[in-house]
Length: 455
View 1 (cartoon, rainbow, N blue to C red):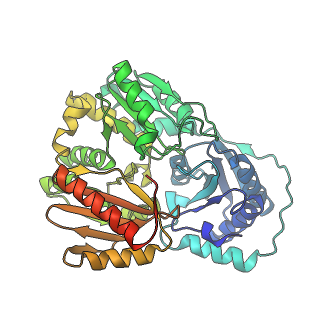
View 2: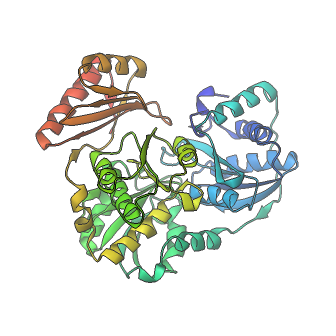
């Protein structure tokens, strides 16, 4: 088994060379032991081609260990937290690799109360159990019948309970599901609202024939931008592969960054109650901090990643957390990140404000930023060390990778938790500063070590 699959807050690798059915079978044993022999385990999966096979191997292991296994079928990652939070089961696993390319597969785990397994060293504890106790555990494929559970109606009811659905106007929306799991879920949601939904790539297809289900990259929302302007829609929404992330397109076809959406949601949430504790990750922009200061709110900056943020949601009893990457976390959803909950909150906000999305975002669009840019480098540690030395006169922190701040610009350079990449985010007060610093940082990263930009 490839040790690199055990990551900070989930398990993820390339199928079948790094993670296959035999590995999943052994990992299920490790999860079962780590969680103290849960009696009821719910299992779901995303649309990836390998997902049903990995799902079946894990189901086999849990059944052989004596657990009752509930088959959730094709579901989003937030449902995994929902079923454990609601007490439907003692543990839940979704087989998914989220936004990664189609060759990848993995799993995310929740325990009773909707608590995340990951972000606090739990994945490494599971790894230790697997490596110590199950090195010779043999997988022989068997077929078991296990109970199906259609949780979608309950999930939709929960999502709509977070808003006053009667206030939501009959918007015309273009939704790009990216051939992931979001299509059937959004279709079900739309039946409960007076929405006119233009569907794009709604059919789950693990080949991802249209584009990768990773809407943070501009090339993956280009079709959506075009469709929004062609159809005169009020806005566009793009979900990632397991539908826990959402990105917006405004009515003019413009990309709405994760920081802009975070600032917009934060403003609404803190307007309702400025005493609410909120979180934002280390890559969110100045506009998010502006909103916190506007309301005099208590806010904490966190590391990037759903496992870390869910731990901090619990630690600080936070009401909401936002990430630049399109993850939005809600206390009322057991601290889960949910693209669907964020979607209905945005629709309610647009309805009550009576404004277009660009009008609503106007005050949050003061600064200039680049799309998150990825670099393939040989040594992440060496690049970070040399960049720190290069900008030693600036303000520097190491909460998550390396953050460099000046009065005119700031940047974050950090290693990915899910892929062998170095990620660069950059924001500036002027377009000129942004362009100059983007060139300088790119040149420096590739000067320190031969690399390949992979935006």
